[in-house]
Image (cartoon, rainbow, N blue to C red; front, top):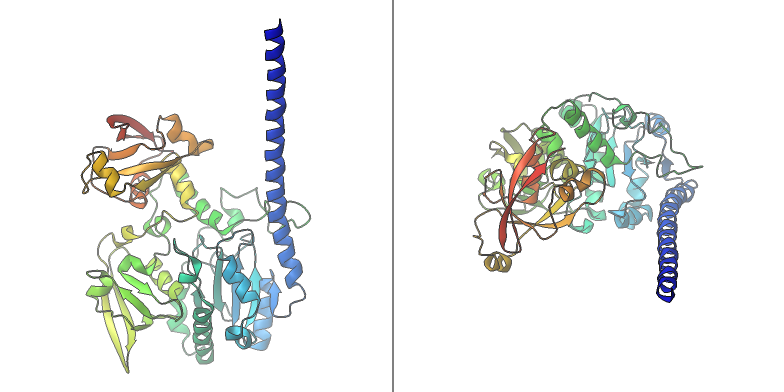
Amino acid sequence: MAAIKTFQVRNAITRQLTIAACLCGLVAAQAASQDRNTKVRNDREALKPDETWIYNDLDAAFAEAQKSNRPLMVVLRCIPCEACSQFDKELLSQPAEVKDLLKKFVCVRVVQGNHLDLALFQFDYDQSFHTMFLNADRTIYGRYGTRSQRPEQEDMTIAGLRAAMLAVLDLHQDYPKNKAQLAAKTGPAPEFAVPEQMPALKGKYGALLDYEGEVVKSCIHCHQIRDAERNVYRTRNQELPDDVLYPFPLPETIGLKMNPDFSGRVAGVEAGSAADRGGLKVGDDIVSMSGQPIISTADIQWVLHRATVARASYVEVRRGDKVLTLIVPLEENWKKRSDISWRVSTWQLRGLATGGLVFEPLPQEDLAALKLPADKLALRIKHVGLYGMHAAGKNAGFQKGDVLVALDGDDRPQSESQLIAQLIRHPAGSKVPVTLMRSGKRMELQLPIQ
């Protein structure tokens, strides 16, 4: 009886501790949610009295641009996201480098994807800070804002923004004589006019944010637009086009490294790359690509985003006191060099293609320990999803630490990005044979494609 009573007491204590832990977790989650909501509300309150920024009102911004004959500087910012928050704070402090220039623009801050004109605002939706420069008649002068796996200061600087703003002011001064040259900066109209019309988002979001309630939950985050776009193709059993699977390729995809302090200055050229074969040199200033004026790295990404699978890209560069026209050859499947593994929207792709498994390359010493060749496929599972569609890999028997050595009999080396792109090509509902190493032994599993 004493043993039973002790067991009952222990059980009661365990239940109380479990409930307490759950309540603590719930309180923590609610606090985090409240903090995100507070951040969004505080952003609006802080900028309401700021005469520099028109807040979340594009109609008023276009009207002011028409009236004042100033170009628009539209900053699209996801407030809860930490990525690029430091750059955003620096800009809002109006640093000396751009303070006077800001007065020459109609500055508008947009903090939602809801009701965004998708025919006009075509940019890299995986970003949490992006700027588009426009004429009052909605002609696009250029884009500014790049995000990658690198720290944000390696992609965006205030000096680089200043260079872009000066380039825009030059384009604005020449407008409308240069209107034809700017036409390709606007892409074809998409199937859906605004995000809340897209099937994956329809009925879940309105055109306005709910500042009185759960404002973060009422907001369409930019990466959700990319998720919803991919969802359209998947539900129709259509293959994802390259510009949807590999959106806004970084210049590194063609072998270019850019200097973030300038509009288009080349900081590095990869030997043997398309850029190298095209004759680009370190120190070159890219003036235009495919006939479009370049104001920033984001403009280069737009040209690459719109480029067809295999096509020569004409690049005009300033080298010293000369202006040269170079031809950069884009070979077949060049976009597959693009790394998509860092992107927020790739999380959805992982759920669909890998069942929530996250991979990492195997270090050389681990390859040697497992007696695996360095020139063959070897990707280790570093994370296994636990919930929803991201639990499919776990449910199929995959474990953290497993090493993928063959996919459907193919053991050629590839990155996680290439693996995801290959798997997403399989039809939904299919299962892909996988060979892996676990505890030094080879085994076979089936990876479900969702």
